[in-house]
Every structure is written in C-alpha cells, then in structure tokens.
Image (cartoon, rainbow, N blue to C red; front, side):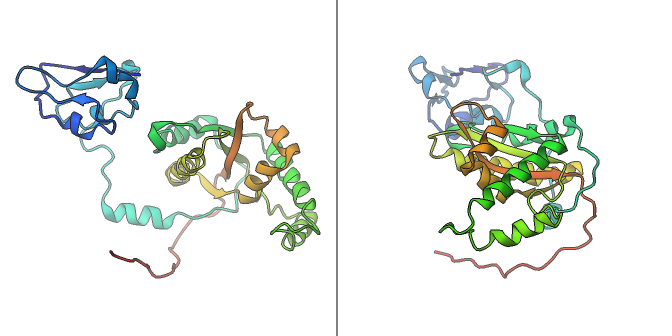
Length: 272
C-alpha cells in the first residue's frame, strides 16, 4: 500500500485530502504538521488517488508509481452539458460493420480509458481479452450456435427462441456477432461477488468512449451467455485459471453514420 508525499512548499493545509479520503486514514494538518498517513493505517489505503486528485495546490502525491503521474491541464476534460447530452443520446448499438480492422493501438487507447472505471473498494478486478482476428470471432459465433443447439427441447428459457436464431445462422446471417471484426471480453476472478458489476461498469466505459475513436459497439449477449455455460467456448477463449467471462462486446468500424436521435420512453422518476 502507498504512502502520501507532501510538498511542504505547496501545501496550504486546507485538509481537503483528509476530508475526501474514502478510508479516512489521512491525519489532518494543523499549524505544526502537514497531512500524513500513519504506518499503522497504510494497509487500509485503497490507492484510489482521491487525496492527490482533489489537492487544489498540487502539493500531494500518492506514492504509487509516481513516475507515471500525468498532469491535468487546466480545463482538460470539461464538456458542456449540451455536448454531453448529444454525445450520449447519439450512442447507438452498431450491428453493421466495415471489414476494416481497428488498429490494436486504437483499441488500447480506449481500454486505457476504461481502466479508470469505478470498482468496488478500487479493487480493479477487470482484465481484458481482445479477439482481434475476424476468423476467431467467427469461430466464437459458431460455438455460440453450438451451445444454442444444446438448449433445444429443454426447460431453458431460451429454448423456444433459439430455433429462429439457428435458422437465421444456417441461412448465412450472423445474428451472433453481426460480422463484427472484433470481440472484447471482460473477465474477472471467480468467487468475487462484486466483480460482475465492476466488469459492466468498465465495459460501459469502453462502450461510451469508443464512438469518440470512430469505433462502433454492441453488447454481445448471446456470446456472453455461451461463454458462461458452454465448456467448448470456454476452452476456446482460454482464460487464465480462476477467472471467468463477465460479459462481451462486439466492435469495429461502423458501416453507417448516425444522423438523428430516436425517441425513448418518458422519464419516470420517483422523489422521496
């Protein structure tokens, strides 16, 4: 666990760092002392970086890979409410992709954003598997159809639904991955009760950030379900021992542009 480094020439003893610390382990400054974390409390540090991020005088540094610290330029990341509104309302589930692959470097840029997603106690349990080869994406779609065949004439909730999907597949329509060139899997430790939610939050970050990079996404629910229950697909993915697929997402360059915003159900809010 990390300590905090205080630049005494910059620290104003405002004690914001102590106030925002989720673990409450930073001792407040006074006229004789600067903020500090006692050795007995260091193990309770979440390495969340709140103390550093909220320091108005840039006096505090979390001693966690300090050489990787990136300065936040003035005004960086400020988005007008109107721009944010239209950016998020424009977001579409893309089901038609070009064959042009998304460069690995661009995928890593988006994933680098997604790693800043919130996670319970800053556990950061989410790791990623990117299936970049379209032929492997096709293989995963085939295995998903194989899994669906095992559901025929069973009590499974999808039993009555899968014949239509299998029929469409047999007619040459990829209703599983929509001919997307790439798949993204978020995988998590087995037995971690909060990690599934952490994974959805991280995937949502990818989903929201992707359009800014010219990438279209669609949540791959059929693949995710098969990956959770079908051993041949699990073997194909080859996740490390002790980890499991939380969910998956197809992505690639959108074939079509977006020119409008569709309607949604009216806002339903209860105040208490």
